[in-house]
Image (cartoon, rainbow, N blue to C red; front, side, top):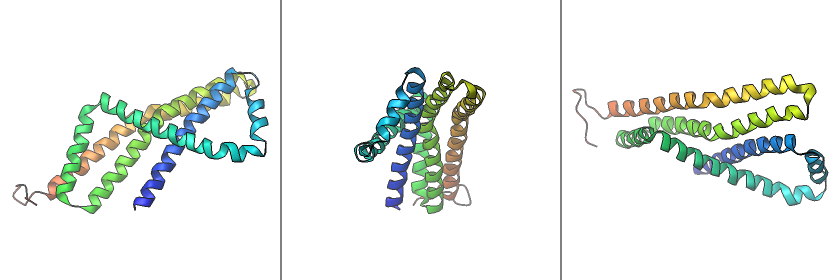
Length: 189
């Protein structure tokens, strides 16, 4: 399980970093003349795969991990109650000793963290797609539609994350119910 978790964390950070890089690439391309042509020239060379591929993945990983940490810090600053509730749920799960509930908690928390980490990169991507209209005026309607769709997806993240947080609290309540005897008293483990 640890190897799978490590691979998943790596892939998640690379995915978040790649989203951010794509958005930044589109923004730079939309405001800089000749950027795409120069990029294509260098990326088409034989040395590109050797010189840039691994550093690009590494940079995407570092950037994605950084965005995840910043997102987590921002969420904790905006909602300290949510962090306290997560710690309380962990305590309840530890007392309940239920692998099923712990697995459910981990799955919900992972989804929540993924969404929170994607918020900023999706907003940058929406801006990049929108700004590309200057380069591709004949696709303006399509680019506006795509940009709006990405922005709406990003805008729905706080709502979905709050629903996932409520699901985490629900898992804690179930763990609490496991820890009580039929008369409602807490069972000492």
